[in-house]
Image (cartoon, rainbow over all chains, first blue to last red):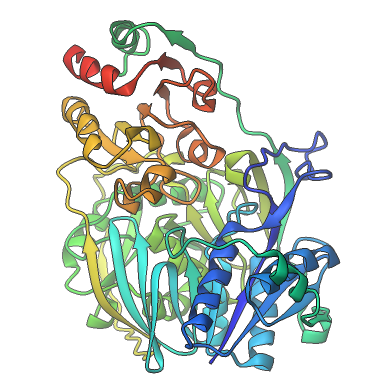
Length: 249
Length: 313
């Protein structure tokens, strides 16, 4: 069995980013970048399936500027076998990402696709669902459990009221939620070994995909700041303020 | 052109999230010429939900697709149905709940259009505001697609009122597929208000130390008729189930009063609650970032403060 995972380069989850003063985007010039946390969980899931003898090969894909090689190398160090970098200068929108991945599915014919449920920068939560639609596959989104079983995968999904379990015919698309697994760190020997693993480079045009989107970002602005509050000394003060000042209880 | 809202329901009854999505549809309709708002209720034995949808103010038609293939609202069934209906609409909306997030991108891809996630404001019929970077920025986006497929941040739109009496039309499209099958569902049962619509929310974090200690929050929640939430740290540590998680990738809440107990206030948690009207933080660490967004901060040991608070209420 072959698994395809996609990894996105995003600003590190611990960095608090600010809006650029000209409103064209975020101030990312010197920000620490990392693999999107949900993509780390996707890689971990694929590697565990390979370790359990359920998969033979894991292909990692990243879409973006050439520097995304860093995140692909991380994926390779964590246990993916080879990488594909689809180079794009600017941000690629979810529908176009899904089209690129669909074109790669046509080439690679994986049995399972594992993606993060959302990236922590654009917060869209769309690509897995769109890819499943374009490829005519079932989708197991927001997965907290995924088990392969004889040509199918059983996925337990985190939903608003609890959990839902669905059974999908393979090939299928699974998107990861936080509690699917706890990703490992790459060991130094594996980081060294990963340097020799192959990364193919393609352009969206090689895959016949136009990356223009019909959704334009007109401007980016900071949210309204909350005004600083006060520190109260006792529980009695707190209840008093809530009753007489805030009037919420 | 008209607006289609995809209702969220459990077949028997309509979920409150649908009322917020209709409110967003009404905000869009103000920018359109004589746009009607229709609601799609797809499910099985879901006449109850359809009747509730027909009573929402401003709704002019309810489309009822009642077939066993729609019982569990699987996107593999619902997306082709919505695609077939979407041709006569300029906008298709659903609440940004786990059901809406699961479904709407699939519909958009079938229609070959972008999807606009989690809008928090309507600027015009084609321009919307949505939070990005865990709410650290607001993006204003404009769509030139023929159909705008949108999920709605429910805390950003007040629920639409009742009093309507729209006709209910049956739709007999049936979608059969063998890609996905429902296995089972494990839903939490609670007497408390829903987290996303409660007027008061009290949440616990890692500082609660274990799941048993959440009983301290329950006692206060009982007095305030509050819903109980949790930070990711508390959920990851196994204190409470994941459907209680408030944050960037969990539930977004904006109650009148949010009480954060033993929560440090990571960016990801703040993203889920910082639009609350009044925020109270109780934490023994005076340096915790939660105090920067709190209207009222109490630096105290929660195991002392919570029983005192319960007494004082």
